[in-house]
Image 1: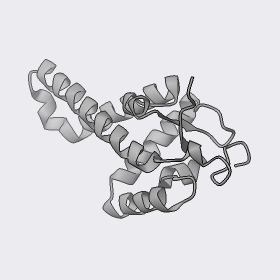
Image 2: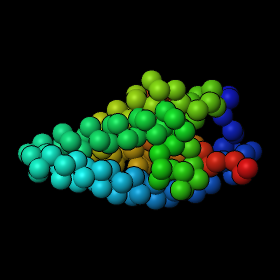
Image 3: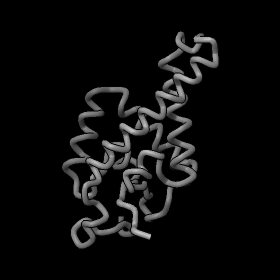
Image 4: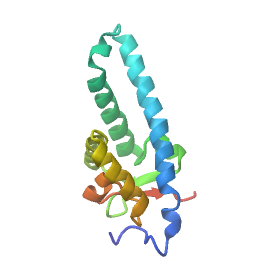
Length: 144
C-alpha cells in the first residue's frame, strides 16, 4: 500500500473515518429504504413478497453504481470520505462491484460484521474486512 497516504505521517487522511463511515452508512440505509419502498409501491405491493431480495438488489445497484461513478455513495459524499484502491486511485466499476459484494457478504452475518467493525476501529488505516481483502481504503476527501 505504498500509493496510499501514510497513516502516521499523513494521519489527516484517516482522522474520524470510522465515525464518518457510520454516518454515511445511516444515510445510505435511509436512501436504500426509500428506493425499496418506492419499488414496492410501484409493483402494487407485490415486491413485499421479495423484500429481502429486493433490498439486496437495490443496495447492490445503488452502492456499486455510485462508488463506480464517484468512488463514494451519496452518504459518503455528505460525510466527506471516499474509497480508494491500493494504487490510491478511484475504484473502477469492477472494483466497486467487488467491494459492494464484499460489504453485503460481511453484513449478512453478525460475526463478520463484528470483525469488520473491530478492524475499522483498530487498524491504522481504518479498513473494514472487505477493504482488507480488496486492498481498498476509505479516506477523508481532500479540500478543494
